[in-house]
Length: 293
Image (cartoon, rainbow, N blue to C red; front, side):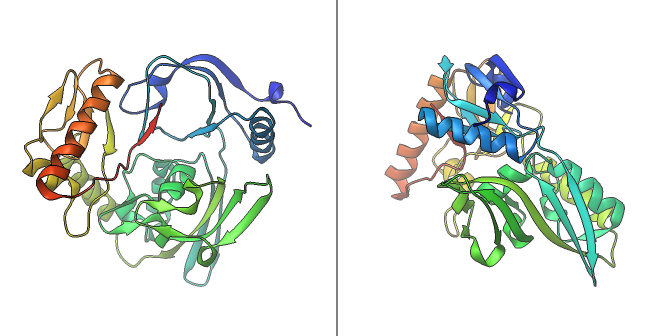
């Protein structure tokens, strides 16, 4: 068996640097795989040592607890690589898990490819976006997926077509097991100005979201016909703070870090919000943000 000692690794990593809301303690080790073999080696090591794997992309929807965390942290940021080919009016982009949406956005603008523009501006990598089925403005990444290459629970590399994969609102089967290695997206040659449309989408995003402070994006999943932000605002939590963590005054479903927020205050805030919405609307909010504690 190959050893993880050959894989890029950093010790005693400040987890605030690995998540967009800048909360968290210290990871004893973070691995940075560069290819599938590296991931397989890390996966096998975690199974052998019975250690939980925690995968990190850009860290835009994850929050870590304070203190020292001893999970096997795996940052996918170095797992790069993009291939592009055409077939008829369609253009296919195969992107490895560490490729960012920013990189894909540049390609679709340069090639004037349609289908991706509503997702432009989401701070995500391919692996994280497919795993959570990221979406915005009525579009989800699963709408574009042609196939996914992933590692299953037996440590086998599997390629599954879109029809073989279970997706739902902010959900994919990979949340219950499996590591996304790469995905193929099907786009099309547009007859309109894709760059202009992306510019307008990003302007709209900036108007509605608090991007001037550290944030973890949407905190809760929307309920059917009742956005989570609406519910939080109705129970008086828009702008509400506990210590230096709070729900944004711009968008109630966005947590923001006003300074040096503590994980314990964040948990208090979430528990209070969930109890208020349950009490007043009899609705159980479901967290979209991942808590690693």
